[in-house]
Every structure is written in structure tokens, then in C-alpha cells.
Length: 333
Image (cartoon, rainbow, N blue to C red; front, side):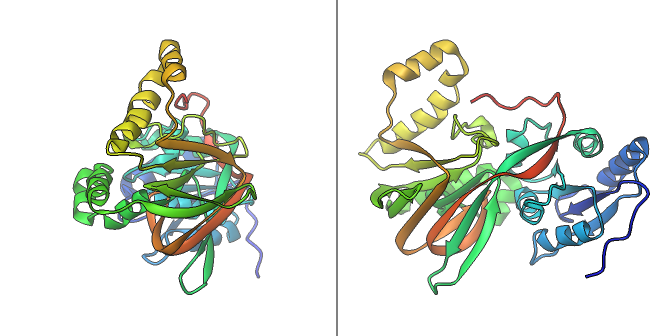
């Protein structure tokens, strides 16, 4: 392999999804900030239809990029992070997608391109954890990927698989709610076998099981209040079908307790008094494994990753470096 050409100045690279990126605005912001920073001209790498950004990022690494800006939706950011895992090269996020999940959890401003670009050239390096998942298919083939925010099997993955593309373009993340309701009405709960941190295998009926690296979802929904991006742990969440009012209890737990009560001291006292963990179960782990009797959809950071009969994985502590600005305020858990 030929070595990357030496640069007298540091240089950035942009990996961008062409259909989601405001390219003119991004080029103007990058040109302005690189000149202020005294960096070499930025190199640009377009993602391809069959590759969300892993290949483009690897080319940028080979070409000697000192920081890589990922411009697009959560799938682009996840793919760039997968290629950057363990390299120490910082990732700067330019949120241009539907959910912008990692950007939300970092406290980034979602609509100011210049602010996102400024972080690439003048921000601080922050190591965060990566979730790692090994997906086992029905034909016994396996593939490994990373996730930044959330991996799931069950209702959430079925909903993402069922989301209508036209509705997603019109409504954004609310399209997932539409798909979730339709899936909930017609689908039965999922029976899983699971183990965390090599514990004894147990069985459980769930609507969905999710493995989280951080907790804030679109719409201000705090799915996992205790999750942190750099604690060396993953948070396993199971939504359980207990009785005819199970979904009401689940929404009360996630929407009311996590989204409203937890924000005040008085509200947290109320949670302690009435805490109900029957419908929503939280576990913390560094390793996890689960299996199902027939193939089920799997989602990673909101993208459909096909059908699987088992998933397993671990946390990779501090495996990704992201660029952040000191004034960004992370959501409170």
C-alpha cells in the first residue's frame, strides 16, 4: 500500500451523502473555517448507493486526513464511525438527516452548518464508546458492525423495516411513529433468549429489546435516562407486554417519567415512590447476546440491517473520537 502524501499543513476530509447534504452551504462553511484555521484545502469524498461511507472514509484515512466531517443522516455518521474505530482520527458531525441521533446526544445545534464545521477545525476531542454487534443470519453467515446510539430487535426494528419512504420524506422521524403503531396493532410479542455479561441464558417475551449507547431520541424522548456515551457500558432495554394496558404503562414510563418528571427534583422523588419496572426493564452490561426462533429484523441507529436469528456484541470503550465545542450542552438524564 502506498503511503499518504505528506502535507505541510493539517487537512480535513468531508464524507458526504449527496442526497441529504446542502453541498453549496457546506462547501462555503468549510472553505471559510479552513482558511481561518490555516489548514490545507479540504478533500471531498462522496458516498455510494451501496456503501454508506465506510469505503469513502477509508480512502480519506489513506489520504492522510487529520479530521473527517460526516455529512448526512445517521447511517452516514454510523458508517464513518465504523471506519474510524480505533484510529484516533476525530469525527466531526454535520447533521443533515431525519433523526440526527448522535448529534442530539452531544448537544449539537442541529440546524447551523457553520457551527458544526467550526467544531471540526476548532473543537475539542472527546473519546466516546462504540457499541459492537455481530449479526447471525438464517444461513449461519455473520457480519459485524458498530452502532453509536441504539441497536434493536423487535417492534422498533419491524417499524423501521415497515416505514414507508414517502412518509419518511414528508414527516421525518414521525414516520417511525406511524410504522410503530401499525406494527404494534398487528404483531405479536417476540420471544427471546438472552444473556448479559455471560450470565445464565434466560427467556423473555418482549415487544422489543434495544441495546443503547446513549439515551435521547427525536422529539425529546429520553429512552434511557442513565445512559452515557463514555461510561464503558451499554444499556439493555426491554419493553414487555404485560396486560391489556401495557403500552399505556410503557408510554407513562418513557414519555412521562423520563421526559417530564425526571427533569426536576420533585419529579424524581415521585418516580422513586411509584417506580414500576414491570413493563420497561433496564439492564447495564459490557456484553450481550440474544437469540430468536425465527428471523427478525435488526436495526442499527435507525437503519434496517436485515433479518437475523441472533445478535451478540460488546462495548468498545473510547473507540471513537468526536469533535465537540465546549458550549454544547448535553441533555440531562
